[in-house]
Image 1 (cartoon, rainbow over the protein chains, first blue to last red):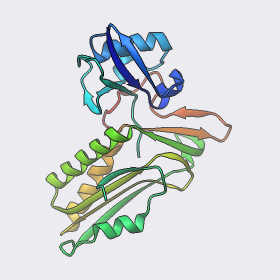
Image 2: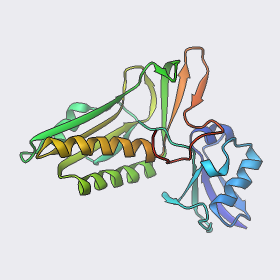
Image 3: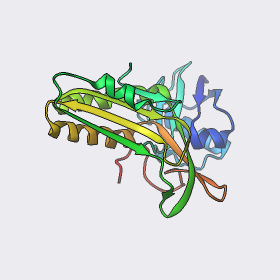
Image 4: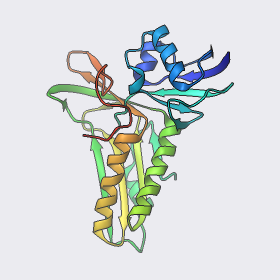
Length: 80
Length: 149
């Protein structure tokens, strides 16, 4: 199991009900972790509409998770 | 002052404009994004912006650096608001200076277009009837970070 810190923003923060949580996961990649959390928390956004960031850098869906990573899932953006 | 900033307080346009002052510049182009009262036919009462500030600031700096590389600029700064904004409030401000107007217009357009498409910032619309919606986050639609329409 890998322990990571997950931070939530916008629609994911509201659907989860918290801004951040520590999670022990068997997921190997950012995409696998999102799928796990989507099922557990009922996130409405499918995985292909969410981008990943690890330790404040955008990463591809296949990015491997490491102990202590800070993971953020980025819903479709709407600045401006 | 950081060239790109996320701000939880109202944007001070006069201070930003002063920071751009440059004897080499013959042109200054600025863009203001305002909160408007309608979106896709629905009356909007107010807007709430939320940002992943650390990544938004580093991505914003990247966009400004790209603009400086592509266009002959003497300066470029931008600020994006977070928090609950009323109709008419300033949500985003971009200012660029250049020796000549062509580069300034093009760079300003580049920065706001890239900012809208790439910055991890989200917008929640509050409607007159009390309902709300996160823009672009309906179950079907475009991918995060895709090009603007």
